[in-house]
Image (cartoon, rainbow, N blue to C red; front, top):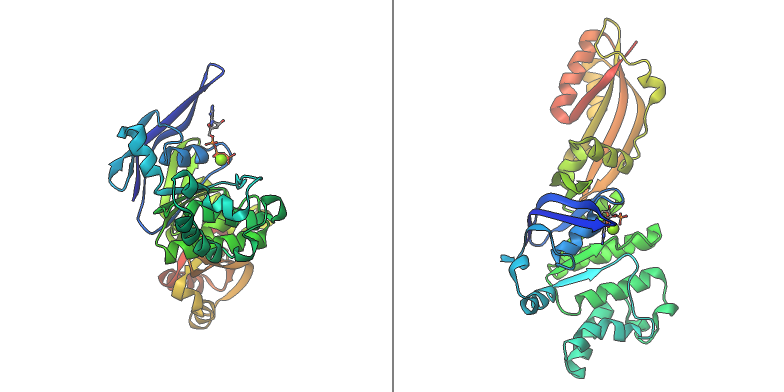
Length: 343
Ligand SMILES: Nc1ncnc2c1ncn2[C@@H]1O[C@H](COP(=O)(O)OP(=O)(O)OP(=O)(O)O)[C@@H](O)[C@H]1O
Ligand SMILES: [Mg+2]
């Protein structure tokens, strides 16, 4: 649906060159919600602005629906942009226009008739839960309601793609959840592909199917959200996942870690389990079958991409052979990492 091929973007500011995007390639499959995460300044907004060519890449291709947008003339580009709605962190509504008029704006600009506009906007007011607010002005709305207006406006021209740049970061957690639920419903019901730029892992956890990380303008990791949470590869990805599952450093234990097993030492083990294995009583089974005990050091259960995902850090106690068979057994059931040994 959307494909970036070796996209680079260099800005020059005060005589200095900034590589905001450095050879970024990624593919957003049709119908998915695709998250792009990264720290402030990583190039996220530049990336999303390159997708609809609000920002022209210095090099590389931006292919949407099989068309390389960098090769289109201004007029063809304007037509293609109609297929892409965009929403922003700060809503960008016109304060002198009502909710209805804000949503209708793209249709007014496109020269549509009053009847056509009424027919298009009324269902959007329903979809976004704003039917009773149609004659209010932005100043009379909460942040969440303003973002709903912005979403409805982005949908007015019936786009196939929705580009969202930090669409929830100005909202409180509860409002964020309701906006994310609305975006997911739009993705499912209208089959609209969504590219979500965010620095919040909660957004990725809640609605994304795939995720990519930008770091200093480079795309350093890309995966399905499930695989990303279970096996993050880069240090930055591991940090994002640890924050999302509320994993804390165990400094008091790590000080005493030995890298190798010695007679009588006990492994400290990190386990990650997803989907069906989250419902499995693997710990008690291992305890019974292998005659070991577990001390739970940290634990968390989350819902990620609609699946249960668990994380557990334990110390395993027992004699050496029992510990080894428990580790063998657990490794067949879930992802097991031995962090070190304590004695
Ligand atoms: N118009 C511009 N002129 C010069 N430099 C720019 C311009 N736009 C962005 N940059 C620089 O490019 C880099 C990436 O900026 P970008 O806005 O894409 O980051 P971001 O990941 O969206 O950050 P944030 O999370 O803070 O929104 C930054 O170093 C920024 O200063
Ligand atoms: Mg940004």
